[in-house]
Image 1 (cartoon, rainbow, N blue to C red):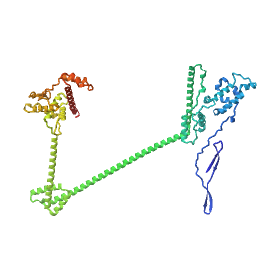
Image 2 (cartoon, rainbow, N blue to C red):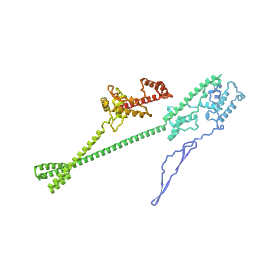
Image 3 (cartoon, rainbow, N blue to C red):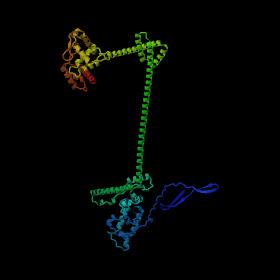
Image 4 (cartoon, one colour):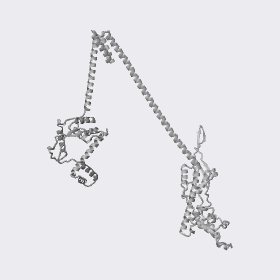
Length: 617
């Protein structure tokens, strides 16, 4: 253990007391004292803060420089050193109000004009230095005016370290300047510069404070114009404006000076250089770690790739070995099969193929070759064994088994061919053209009139119209080719020899009754017995009957135009729209106008649907 004693009023170490540790050891019969050293540890000693002696009027030494006082010009009182006038030039901003009052009283007792007249000294009333003493007290005795004077204290050093000072000890040089400027801080607690052993947090805290330094220093004392001497309000405002602008300029210069001091210290601080170097090394270490991780990842990926490639090569080698083994097995089987076939042929040949005549000989030779081609290795081995013992009976049995197998395979091929043929027939039936029933024929006639010659892709549109509205028993549908063929067939048909007209008239009348909820009176005698021509392609006509109803009158072209114009004139938002539309069309009721409008809408929708179906193909 150790103790350190510091000298009074000094940070220097004066006394060190060290305690040693000894151990008594017994070596054989002899006892020895052994010194056990302690591990040396570096400790941080917190030095006590310097305690300044409190200033009181009693322990202050007041100066009285009479020559300086006599040299003062009362008219130039603003340029004088007020602290020196009162006799406290060394205290300056540290002087308290009590000290300033005491100093002023001492000056009054000694330098008052009455006192000096009593001593026989000649005093000029208009040009006496006592006026300077009075002005000094008026400035320093008022807190706000003293603050203004302290801001421009002529004894204050506004310089920053020069090039020669930077070569000296950094901490001593900049400690002087920062302590000097700390008096202007608005915050009472100002961090110290510290030393080489200061922590990073302390260094960052110090520079953070000074980079955000707030100064209470102001320059109203140096105002060139005195607004109290102005004659009117406008002149005072003008002078005040000039003074404020000048103060702001000087304040900016002061903050720029402080900032230059902080920048100079920051750039020359060895601790900052050390911190930057540590950060640089940390970044380099992080970068190297990242590169190392990336390299390790790359190596790992390459290793995985190599292993995958190795596994792939091993799998390929195993597959090649398997294929080779299978090939060799086939070769062995092929050789064994060839051997068994040769044994069978030689045995049959030696026994004249077990034939009694030449025709039987040829048949048996043909059957033998078929047996050699059809039978497997095991079957051939079994056959050779049987023939060695049974001879002809075994050979005949083999021929019989071979014929049965060939017949069975033949039947299977025939059945497969029949099944395939039936499937083809079903597909052909599925692809057949649908039937042309009466409803589809009527839809064809209607579509031909609805889509006249000149319509884009006319027959595709007609086919789609029939497919959408017709009835079908199968999934087959009409195409343009079949529709065109049926239309030509209808053009060449003599309708006078069939009952198509009667069926069409009946169907039309039934549809008419479905549309009308109430049964209409139909004049049977007015039903035409002649077929009207229906144009299919503009040249030839197909006849069909129509039904004439008394209550319905065809719409003329003029009425159609009037209806279209009325629909444009009275939009859907118009009140009582259809009443107004009916008033625009003579001889037409509201109900007839609505019905005609619905018919037109259905027609337009049908056209659009048919054309859209063609365009999507």
